[in-house]
Image 1: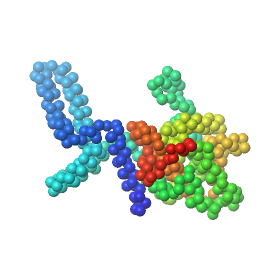
Image 2: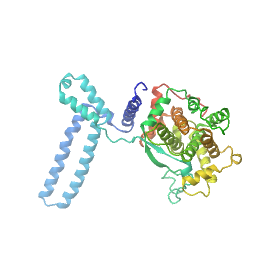
Image 3: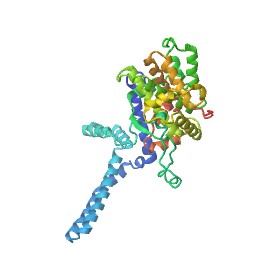
Image 4: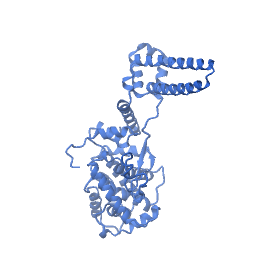
Length: 408
């Protein structure tokens, strides 16, 4: 995967195809309908579906029954649209493409026919619209903590029909999955996964500390401690707050540079993993109920500490800075703020800060990806799937699994 410059791109494309096969297998009937005899019968059925209604229309027109003509026309159009759409989806599905290629390889007559090869090539290049949109859904605790779901929509009466939203449960606009994110995850695959601690060791910070900062050993211990909190959810939320703090306390890096790429990776993966905590806890290590409880507690802490702040992120970050560590030392928000300040004030090289954060979040994606709950990943395929599912397939191919007796 790493032997070529863009080998990771090909790997993730292969994983996309694998998950497309799984989607068709679990949620469509295409795999069982691709027998040649069935396809021929379906193709012969189309002229019949067209001829019979046309005969009815012609009869109604001759009899001057316009009401019957209009109703018949609407029904015929609806049936034809559905039938043609289903047939097109079936012949251009991933399973159909595999069938064409297998028949082409086994049939020497097809191989001698240049048109057959060109036709199969064209059909294999056609990609139907799939639920997976190559996007990362996003969530920001500091930005969304003040959100309260409308009571007219989410209440006891609607609880039986709608999934109830909690305070702070407001999703941000999704962002595109960039090649920098995929490259960072691919590079982290060869490391030893320790909840992000590898990024601290490989990015030697000893030469990048400010003269007025604490000594290197003490800060390294603090950073390592932030990687070994009570649960993985605690680690994600604390580093998520620290990343937001760094994002607003330091000027944004120029795009198309190494620092800009690291900023892009850190910001996107930080908000994506926070999104998983809020909206897809079953995909993460630990019991979902515990994850939901930790999130609810983090929202309560953030609402309390940022009470009175306006909607601007600048004011919220300033209020976050004013939190006194001694008063709320063990809260998630205070831990995240303290970690962010240690990164901003302790490390002189801003580029190194974003390198550490980018590597940390790439390591964390690989750490949380191994899962024994295949049903949860299959469930999320119906709504487009999650990028974490793609990473799960990647680490599964690499032989990385989660211990079934894992304490989380």
